[in-house]
Length: 330
Length: 205
Ligand SMILES: Cc1cc2nc3c(=O)[nH]c(=O)nc-3n(C[C@H](O)[C@H](O)[C@H](O)COP(=O)(O)OP(=O)(O)OC[C@H]3O[C@@H](n4cnc5c(N)ncnc54)[C@H](O)[C@@H]3O)c2cc1C
Ligand code: SF4
Ligand code: FES
Ligand code: FES
Picture (tube, protein in one colour):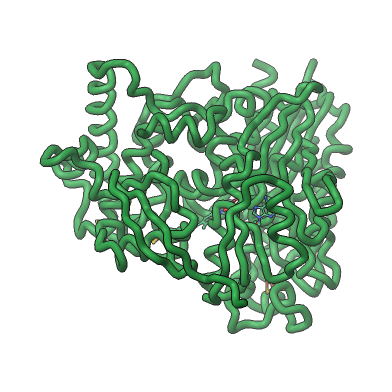
């Protein structure tokens, strides 16, 4: 690991000022991704600005009836918060489906959104990788890619975004707020992650040096009936190979409103807009759920070894929506 | 001037202050083991993937291999060495002994620290990934074997002593619940999410 300086920020403007325009400096949240990547040499910062002491650790109701979640709220506190569990059960479920109890106690909301891909080539500095070193190529295209993207990827990078929390927040139309030296700004999660294109190393639309200050979740009555379901290669403590965040309003057997987002299939949490359109106003029946999944997955471009994900996601959508519809009928 | 890449810090571990100078690259785990001779916490993977290095920080379980020592200054650290009260083992330690919650013992300090926190988290009403209904109105789930397995999933055991580990955690949870009933008020477990770190630190103190 390269030697680095360490500073603790006491307030938001201080944190932004400490990081400054130094491309070699990084904010340190829980460190569960950054410290890991520093050990493997993927990240080589010369300076860390620790943001965990910042007064961004609260979860508060907004006047509109949503929630404002501070950037340094730990994943554990987010999942355990009574209002999150009451208003957005899928968000609690998504967070609890990620990592382990120990890691969730450390991981922050800001860091979770900015965690890097788990692509094995990205993590191995002896291998080429367009995301880590632009222009060196993507060995995953022909190599080990069974857990890589089926949607929205390019020939430059087929990595997935590993966050579970982000999938639920995407279904909830959450907005990321940030602070720069020029003042505050905000980005809907839908615009937060950049398309892969030929610049897989540029992952978010955050301005350079921006400190994430929090996430605002708008009110979403539809989320009262919602679910996050994650498929992985062992029962717990593993990244997803596919996941679905769904919220569903069904009355008289007809879908009135639906939110659907997919995890582990793209470079970002994937909002399934085509599926949502196909579902709205139709009878809440398994064949319509399958047709909606097919509408979304028509754009899938699987690789040699990950076509299973297309079937997996289709089945997952049908299973989750069927469960929610049965609950609604009770 | 070259930036400072080491700091003189004081770590508070098991109620005792340890002043030391650390290179910023030093993890809390390496500081404990290599500098302070607190070798109870074990290094399995060094990447947050096995739980062998689990310690309690401000009353909560964390992996010490992804914590930087310099960032742990000012926080209350409890390692497996700090769980017993004198010669009286912590109920979780006693249950692991009584029910053979280990084979080689390498993962055991991490398992025990993790289990101490699992019991607190459950008592505070935290749901888990296998909790059917996470809404607060549904009430806390019983600490079933399934709940214990999920909550302890951050601790791997290469000897696969899982069956007896689950039994030990279950026994310890019962013992702790019994003690809670007989202890005076003021021993509330860590608060539910909305209270944040400060309240938890107070609760742990
Ligand atoms: C073994 C293991 C298993 C895991 N399993 C899962 C899983 O199943 N599902 C899942 O979703 N995740 C999983 N994770 C990932 C984990 O959720 C992330 O590492 C964590 O959420 C990152 O948060 P952090 O606060 O620790 O970020 P850090 O590691 O501190 O930071 C990550 C990045 O965010 C930047 N950053 C941090 N805070 C801010 C801020 N406020 N503003 C701007 N930039 C900031 C940092 O500079 C860094 O670039 C796992 C991790 C490990 C080690
Ligand atoms: S998929 Fe992306 S992250 Fe993985 S090797 Fe290719 S370019 Fe790198
Ligand atoms: S050594 Fe820390 S989790 Fe494995
Ligand atoms: S007892 Fe040997 S690793 Fe768990």
